[in-house]
Length: 263
Image (cartoon, rainbow, N blue to C red; front, side, top):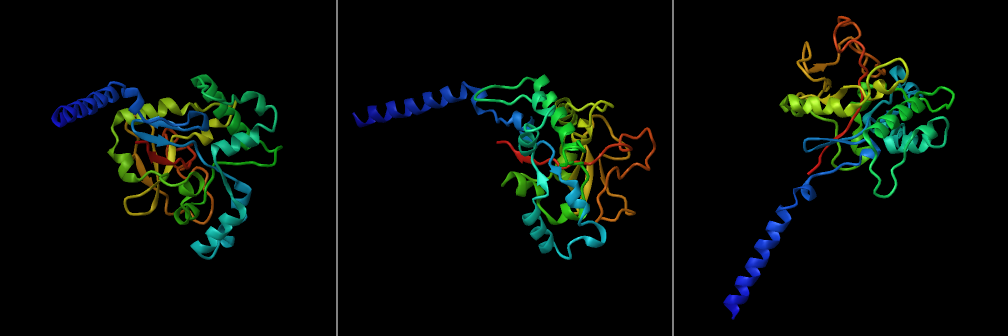
């Protein structure tokens, strides 16, 4: 009887395993699209972080904190960055942006069009001079080298992507990323400034670098060092504006988006 019972127990476990395997969708990683996150392959990617540029301007150049510890103290005191959900909460209190934002409730899944509209409304709200908040996607390189912005704002596991990660991806990764980015440059809104395809990465040498996730074969390279002429204690806007006008790097702002293994 013990042998028969053991056989039934093994059979139960095997059938249970097969049942679980028969529902692949239940094993697929997910992200919170309403919070601006996207899933590319098995990588979760956050919406851009929003720097409160007026606060950053107050500490740049000669006024930059004397040590990394002092920089962290400033972050704790001022909270100079905001996440996409925090910006959404702010914008929901201000028209006309509140009426342009669709809030996901319960099990509601936002459509691609609703997500795109949210990106545009929140970007426009962040840039609005009259609201007084004013977040431009301009960062101080030295700050990003001293502060783990992703972990601080989004929690454990989130980090800026690395040069190694970017260079290891095949063409489908960049195509899928661009397809979900949904911020075509135009003169009617500022969304493409915040949802730029260029972002900061941690270089293989440990230095802060910039990568473009544009599909294709970006020139002169997919990952670049920041120009040596730049003062790393001062915010940067378009660091490669001296490139040829036909270059994809010429007009792109550089944003902070955080990556995390979705498994």
